[in-house]
Length: 266
Image (cartoon, rainbow, N blue to C red; front, side, top):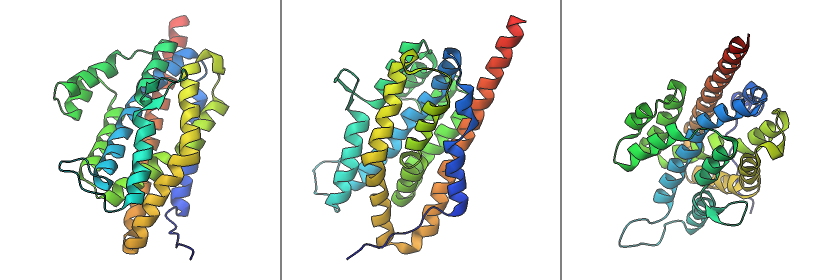
């Protein structure tokens, strides 16, 4: 018997997704300096994604003691498979590494500063809250807004809302968005091999396995509670809108960097 499929992506949400896939920020990455600035912003989105992942793992599996079997073994397996790859994937040499590790290594490869982000991590490791850590790292305001939106969702939203944000705001849009970046930037692969490996790994995993798995989590939840379709759509819309704001801020930052460079050279 064919399972019912719920249409979460309305025309308005599809327009948001198309806008992310073709965002002009990618055309601003025309040299190594622009890539460095981009990565110094994007690393925060690489980090905060895991809070959505771990929230779903907490809700769909058992991570407390004593252990109890998950209510939905299929959902538990799907989120565990996603977490395995995100938290302990392999690098280009076959060594275990989280995707954040891959990204930080890629930043080092191209000379992008990780100092600000490492201040952020150190404050969190010392027990500080996310907002204070972002302030200590002197993250741009648009980055703070994006991260705090993600953390608020991960901490306070319903499981279905987190699923929708996780899938429609990340897994569903990332393959085409990252492919668009590779197709439209002004650099060659050998100028930033670690970054290209990171992007291609996400295109492969999110397109072939993580995306379909996350979609199935959302669809199964809607089959149980179809009256929550509008809630799901709103979560998808908000997640994509937040990413738009992140890219808008990043594009403005890159444009200003190029303007400053031209002024200094004049």
